[in-house]
Amino acid sequence: MKQFGSFIRKEFYHIFRDKRTVMILLGMPIVEIILFGFAITTEINNSRVAIFDPSQDVASTHIIEKIDASKYFNVTQVLNSQTEIEKAFQKGKTDLVIVFSERFNENLLHTGQAQIQLIADATDPNTATTLIGYATNIITSYQQELMGQNKVPYQIKPEVKLLYNPQMKSAYNFVPGVMGMILMLICAMMTSISIVREKEMGTMEVLLVSPMKPIYVILAKAVPYFVLSFINLMTILLLSVFVLSVPVAGSLFWLTVVSLLFILVSLSLGLLISTIAETQVAAMLISGMALMMPVMLLSGMMFPCENMPVLLQWVSHTIPAKWYIIVVKKIMIEGLPVTSALKEIGILSLMALVLIIISLKKFKNRLE
Image (tube, rainbow, N blue to C red):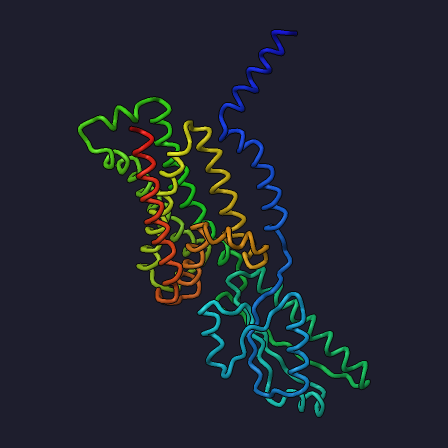
């Protein structure tokens, strides 16, 4: 039994000697329960609502107040004309637009009927359906209040309009997310494992003391994954258009350029992971925690980031895939010009620059 106990102590010493492994073993459950507990939710709160109300009467004002008082909505914008409706969606300032008919209260009192139009961005069909359902319930509640007070069969008819994806195809939502996840995992995870494999086998030092400059050795490891990711990008786009019937509504050229920028960011991230990990197993674990799980949960691929706690929303800002998915939706799905995505492109460019500088500097220092 003493020998058995000695072996157990040795194994504990071996585990606790590697601080990174201990952090992964003890930290991963905490991170996962927080992410899964707060990020995964089907309830949508504090959605941005824009109002176009040409009548501005008692009934429309009452409905707007009920919508703004709901935990599901925040009235953030009042539109002055119908031409501003699509611009509000293109600029990403609203999730739902509510349009009241002219003489709304007058029509309701005299004819017993009035119309409201609910306009939603259907690039995410689940979110659009949920928002329309919330708004319809509030309108129905107001209608029942009127009928209870005046004993008159009032009828408010919500007319639903879905932008960008009127067929409500789920492919319009998951194709951008899948593009971001595949490119991130192939570039970052595979690059980090490839470089760590050389370090683990002791051959990286041999390569770095060869006549070729170290930077070229590193680039030579990254270029194949850059090419493979580009091939995967073209494959995804072809399958999306010809199999899933998701057209490229915007510029294919700019979509490709932004994708190449995202690939560069992912390669730099893989290089950074390779400076932290000493073994392939450690690289896989770090990649799983730092890439796969956050990309799936915090990039907006599966669940809207706006529904998450403020802290997780700030964390999501550091995930490159989030900004790439936003750009893909704007250019590919909504057909907007590249100028509408300058903010996201600027953030990705800054991430690429910072990651390249940090990862190359740390990589050189670790192998000296």
